[in-house]
Amino acid sequence: MKRKLDTLVSKMKTVDNLVFVALSRIQHSTFQVLEILSACVSKEVNVYVAKQQMILDGSMQAKITATVLGLAAEIEREFIS
Image (cartoon, rainbow, N blue to C red; front, side):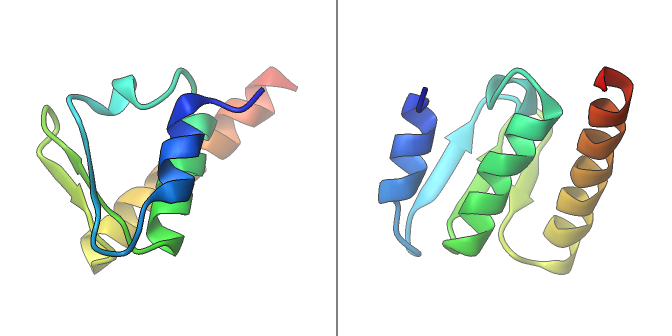
């Protein structure tokens, strides 16, 4: 089942910004968060997370943050399977 957020991200363009109140509000699991962030990075859409004061904009800091989230997603998958 396609989520509304997936539909929104698929329609976004390079100049668009996506704003969230908190990272936990993006999706329920870390893996789903990483999927959304990855889609935004590939489309060059900036992601702002207000509570954590994070900007994921393709910068080195954003890439490190995405990598850490990716590692967390991988650990989560290992514990589930």
